[in-house]
Image (cartoon, rainbow, N blue to C red):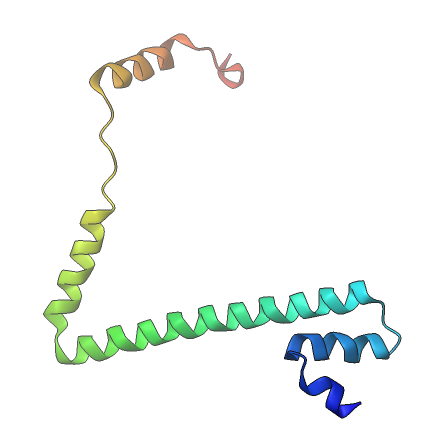
Length: 103
């Protein structure tokens, strides 16, 4: 039995192991998906933490560069300026609509 498992992938081996314990195949697949989701979240936490460490290290050596990077990130997130006519219509309609809460 051990030689048969050598050719299978790790996930298949886990599913077969779960299935052999009289657990239905659906629950074994669901369990594998939950494990995969947990690993994915762990990886996201790891990447966020390493990015934070990188920023902290850079702040200790080059604080000006950290601030300039933050300023550049804020400039990239500029909102679109609405059209003049669209703004006029929006504010004009604000006075014309009746709010049932203020009647």
